[in-house]
Image 1: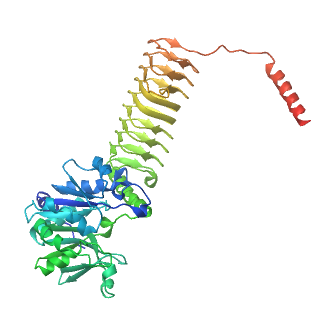
Image 2: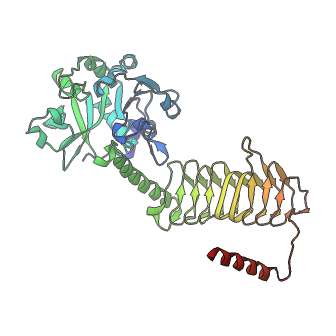
Image 3: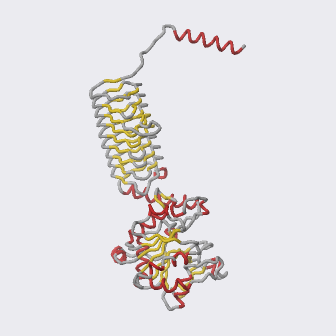
Length: 463
């Protein structure tokens, strides 16, 4: 296996100019999905975004993204300066790259172009930079390869004296060629001039009846150009063709994300049970208990404790907060320092100021909860009337008694108290006590009379 360049050499590669073509026309038929394969997600990020980010981190300049006929769904996920190119109808990988010829023709003929696949999310920036560097300083074409214990299904790398002479797809390989264990990883780098000259020469004389990108290697050798390869770990080139492979790569990504979080100061009591998103931001000295799910758009401050079976998404959590167990923080939730959100509390578009707490069994949506306010068990903000959402504003140090319903829009002033079981629809001034509880009625010996009547009815039914 080729050892990646040392940091100083990698920096040299990253400072060089190169472009990328990302092939993203896969329809995902084996995924049994109407969603294009490159837009399926790992750790809350589309597959293509992992590849785009890796290319950007490697130092890529201009990028061409080749999609199928309908590319509207890709627009939110690609950089503004990327050029979306349509391949229709699909006629193989060589045809996909040839769709970029107009853009490639304006580049310097020696300009390196790295050809990536949108369904290989584990490829690393260092590998992309190294591959581009090999094309800039040595080979006219350079391909990534790996050794497979079972090479079935892969294109075979035919080499001679350490040089790459051809890539033969398995369906076109001879019995002798099929014994080769060095296989094609798919990713290729080539000089722009080579692509412009050789792509039009591709033919469909193969078992698939497609234009193979891999045939460029044979054409390059015939033209006297130099073709080489880099051998790397197979996992980095792992692709996705079905739901099982998607799950397998999700597991790989999650291991990496958990390790990164723990190295940065997060304690996980049972790491294998914690799900993270790629964009999760952590502070230090955070404790995460088992079976916690952290979705997209979350940031968690220093000293927080996330208890078991909690689910977070789109939440900004300040320092020293305690969440859960069994809490659900939805998008738009903001917790300032020292907030406590307890078991079976759900929040959405709710801003909790410093020290506020809702310890159990509440729904708080479209609300502001002031400093040190206390939300009792069973409290709900009735924020939606079936047509519009309205806001509840709870002041600092307010106390909301258990099983109260706050009918938005409504404002509860600082230091106000709401009696348990109240339905509040009007403003409650600061320092006021408000309750809507109905008078309690007690009937002496009423329980005994109730039982007598109930037993009598039961007896009549039995007859």
